Amino acid sequence: MIKIAIDAMGGDFGAEPIIAGVIEALKQREFQAYLVGDESKLKSLIPHKYSKFITFVQSSEVFAMDESATDALKRKESTIFKAVELVRNGDCKAVVSAGHSGASMSLATLRLGRVKGISRPAIATLMPTTQANQKTLVLDVGANVDCKAENLFEFAIMGYAYAKEIMKIDNPRIGLLSNGEEDCKGNEITKDAFEMLKKLDSFIGNVEGNQIFDGSVDVIICDGFVGNILLKTSEGVASAITKIIKQSVKKSPLAILGAILMKSVFRGLKNQIDYDEYGGAPLLGVKDCVIISHGKSSPKAIKNAIFQALKFSESSINEVISNELTKFAK
Image (cartoon, rainbow, N blue to C red; front, side):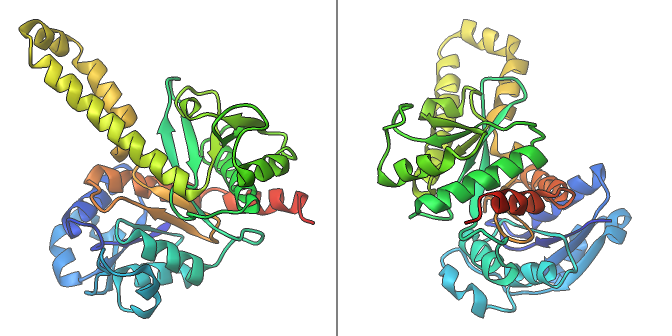
């Protein structure tokens, strides 16, 4: 049975939504959850029938959101430190945290180590597309604000491996995010990266922002500065459109009737753009599985983050990354 370390107290809303997410996941699949937190506060949240799947790891110290990520190594009694150590020591296969993302990245990189050949791990996220049952993987979305061309090449290899192993795409199409599709477009770093990426059979060239959502590419590469702005902008647009639709519907009784008739359509749309459906973002390039969830994660988001961790743990993604990098080693 796969063992997953869970930072049970790191989220913005405390332990309740995290534990609720663990229970929801256990209702659908068996795994061993190592809950890192204050056992006296967590135990009462666990229904007796699921107690056999729970192991408590005592820690009452939470790494606060306003603390510096550089201090994470010093806080050896914190929930996130202990959760990462469970993976480092081989007790668990993966870690899920809705706590301080910077601390999670720092500890994962320094305590778990990087996959051979990877200089910088990257955060990947899935974006919805207009094509049924198809998503676009985007990386990096925040781990590396400043990148070299070599880093973008590594991101492409990691994205390719994730698309093959986790998304089950036989021949993933990789694109480099730029300000135009022409080969000459981009800044100096992306132009250099373009030349390196041409070595990959899966590379289709530069792609523009609108292609993220049209299903024409499977993996999109960018630096963490651009990727994070892209992610937050997309979330903001989705939220704004939802609010505009609600406001418009309320203005007319006929529109309200139409909305009622289209309830299932709206529900499907919400599911497609809802963060909770994805649960968290994997940190690719470290030796073990680390899933970083939003601090405001709901039980549903935690459940899906756990499913991501389980799927990752059953894959050979890091082996694929290493094998692909070996092909291009100098």
